Length: 83
Image (cartoon, rainbow, N blue to C red; front, top):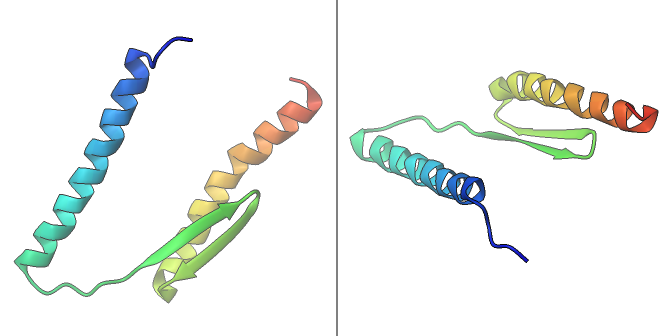
C-alpha cells in the first residue's frame, strides 16, 4: 500500500492554510473594532437543504443550496442512466 501522493499532501496543507487564514481574519476583525455579527448556515443532507440563521442571509443561502444541488442531481441522473 502506497502513502499519500504529492497532490494529497498539497490539498491537506492548503486546507489547513485556509483554516488558519480564516482564524487570523476573525481575530483581526475582532481586535480592530466593533462589528455587528450576523450568521447563518447551510446543511445539505442528501438532496435536502437545511438553511438557518439571520433572516437577511436566508435567501442567499437558499440560492447557494440550489446552485449546489443542480450538479448533484445531474450526477445522480447520469449515474442511474449509465452515462
